[in-house]
Amino acid sequence: MENPIIKVESITKNFKGLKAVSDVSFEIRSGAITGMIGPNGAGKSTTFNMICGYYPPSNGKIFYKGEEITHKHPYEYTNMGIARTFQIMKPLGNLPVVDNVVPSAYFGRYGAKSLKEAREIALDVLNFTGLYEKRKVLAKDMGTPDQKRLEMARALATKPEMLFLDEVMAGLNPAETESAIELIRKINDSGVTIFLIEHIMKAVVSLCEHVIVLHHGEKISEGTPEEVMNDPYVMEVYLGKKGENNA
Amino acid sequence: MKTSTLTPYAIRKRIAIVLLLTILAVIPLFLSRQPYVMNVFILIFYTSTMSMAWNLLGGMTGQNSLGHAAYMGLGAYVAALFVTKAGLNPWLSMLLSMLIVGGLAGIVFYPCFLLKGPYFTLVSIAFGETIRQFVINWDFAGKATGISLPFGAESFLEFRFMSKAPYYYIGLIMIIGVYLLMRKISKSKFGFALRTIREDEDVASAIGIKPMKYKVYALIVSSMIAAMVGSFYAYYNRYIDPDLMLQSYSVEFVLPAIVGGAAFVEGPLVGGAILITLSEFLRNEFGAILPGINLILYAVVLLVVIRFRPVGLLGWFSESKLKKMIDVKILKKSEKDEEV
Image (cartoon, rainbow over all chains, first blue to last red; front, side, top):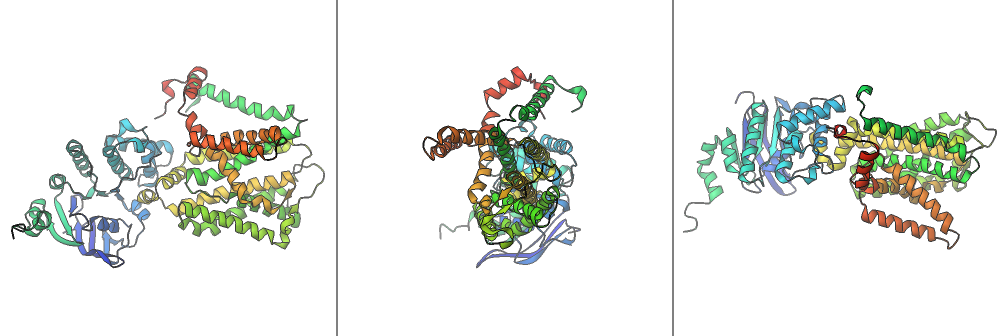
């Protein structure tokens, strides 16, 4: 792959005796949407958190645009142009929606100089993510779909080049999923590279051009969604072995 | 907002503020014969200022310190020592005290911020008590006897006055100054960083805020204000002792913010005015009837407020019909005044 935006080199994470992720390597192509799938406990979130600087890997290296970022702190990522969302939504509950996004405008790469400027950026982002109407609502009073959107709005307001989305569609109904897919595509069209973890296959298939499959902390397959879905081992992991029940 | 575009609401709001300030400014003219009432006002001023200092760290940043009396006491001690031992000017001593206490708090408490939530609170109590024990056993600072400041002729330069009026005005300037600073912080980049940290530190990290850095900054500003109040206290009372740092005083600085509404910059002001007036009133009316009954009544009032208005009086007021009525009927608020 030419000039990947993110390059992960055989990262491993041990939690005491447990090997959560073992020797995983992959690359994320600049400008594309890359997905990561796998059953529960496969190590997706751990991998995600290692790349985003929340857990330092026990072994291995991570590169962003050719620069090693393995041991950088999460707060150093923003200025490099990397943003993330949290799987379990973390809205700033006691603040109105717009004030949830204002800090990103201040501290992100827009570097707003005044509250007025930060508000304008925040409102633009809320408009883009479809939360403008709810700008005055307290974040904790919103439902799951809107809180998931707020996660993305907050990340986007830092003006990232690379966006990590951790299960932003979990818990949404089909219609809400559809509009979330639309939003993610819109974000990607605006020039942001996206890496996402998702359980909803429909979303992965329709969005991603490259998919990585994890199982038991190891990468078991990689390729286009079709290639991956037709991989016998992936099918076995997801659907069980053929004739297993009859044997 | 430009002057030319002032709505009737904005004009009336300004008139109300000017009116309030005028009343506060002329009060000493009418109360010059009543030093006790003046004393209550001064008490309200410095306690509310302390509460605002606490609120920067507790209310805005979510780091509940129960050791703020120690910063105030330390501030009082440093200032008093400079005045009595080095013969420095009290105003200069106040400034030095703020710098020293701010620096000390920043360095000593830095490791405490590795602890979160209740653990931080516990350590803040322990540190406060450590400082008090240190002062009690410190020969140079008069051990448990404390320090008396020199008496003498009235002098602004020496921060020494016969009547209470000058202390009243200095206290008033202090509370207004700190309030304006807090308001400024609340609307600034710094304030948004603190609130983000209060709500969730992981989120703060994810959008480029270094939590440790901003927590320490908040602590330094907070302890500097505490040191200023402490110096004022020392000059006003002309005598300080280590009891100033008792942990129970720390709680007295927390209460105004909680009762008034810790989420609001104005919370400590409202809480301070109400609580101190109430506690002084109860002490006068009931203290003589049965010793301690005033404290019991005070506790009952606190319980009721916290039980029914956990977000503080302002939290309730800002959503209430009363505020709507005042806004619309008296201040002529229109829809144009709704921000964003």
